[in-house]
View 1 (cartoon, one colour):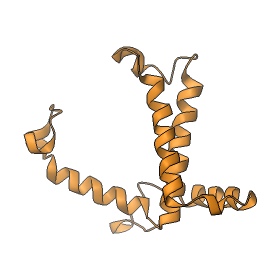
View 2: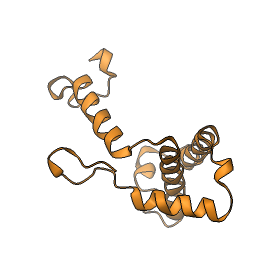
View 3: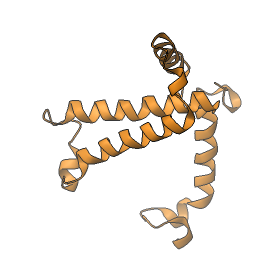
Length: 127
């Protein structure tokens, strides 16, 4: 992981998680299955499972999904699955997630300046 400018803490510190996932896959001889294509497809599938949990909820119910005992475990599990596949994919591609996040936040700040975007859900080209 790279350190951010000025020595600030990383936004995304995933080195330990990457190591744990690599060890998990290595112990099971799964590395050969963890191509970027396969991991991206698995990530999309897990994101779909997360979306399915919210599909028919009202806005209010969706806000409480992680606190409602009936859905909280499923929401946490699907969020974890999405993160695990994302971290594994980034590791296999050699992508520094901290740097990627910093770069994307900076780009979004330019596309969505506060004075034009505050309180609006419009896409940047419609502001």
